[in-house]
Image 1 (cartoon, rainbow, N blue to C red):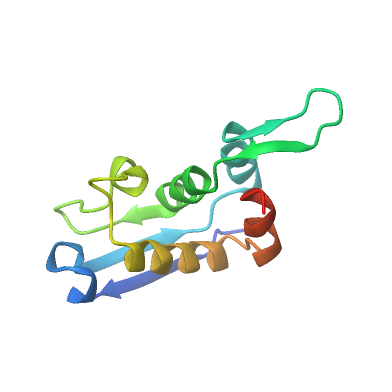
Image 2: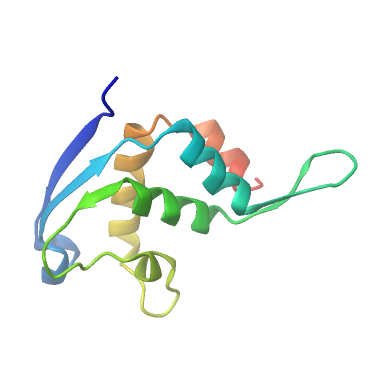
Length: 116
């Protein structure tokens, strides 16, 4: 079965450096699970989630899904994770919605992975 793809044309609303064509591809269940596990701490006895880095999970999921972007490569994992030299909030939310829908991430999963 082929993985689903979504192509998005981003205009200059997030800044001219981000304008262009982006292609996102659905990631596998195994990839998504490994991303979540690498940024989640579990209690050794109960197995309950003790801590989860939602931002890192979301950034790595976006990065893993991103297959094409403009030649200037405005999106990098470092910029997705960056607190001082990161991407605009509105762009991050926009990319998150695309990737969550494409990869079948449910609202409950993002709520649970953020520890809320």
